Image 1 (cartoon, rainbow, N blue to C red):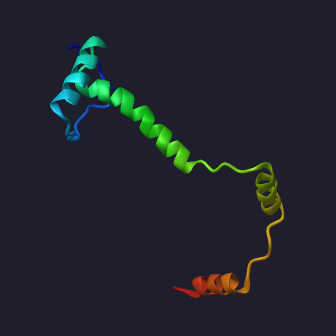
Image 2 (cartoon, rainbow, N blue to C red):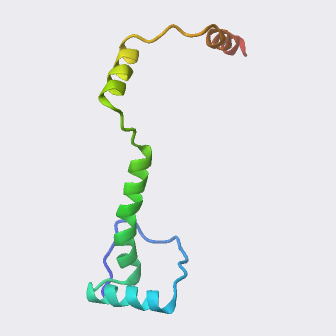
Length: 94
């Protein structure tokens, strides 16, 4: 099977345990696509990993919440006394 050249050399390993039937299925599909098994699996897994991370890092706000965030950014509330005291203590440290 021809191997596609990746931009970064693959030096790390991941072990993947499968049943013989699962491995045979993956190998058959990779062969049909003319890819090595690693490339075939990564081609499917990496975009999914990016989607999972993007969804976890994205905050979706309602219109009302978006307007509230913008209001707070433009007109932040005054800092509470405990925060001011903590900042003063921090500035006094050597």
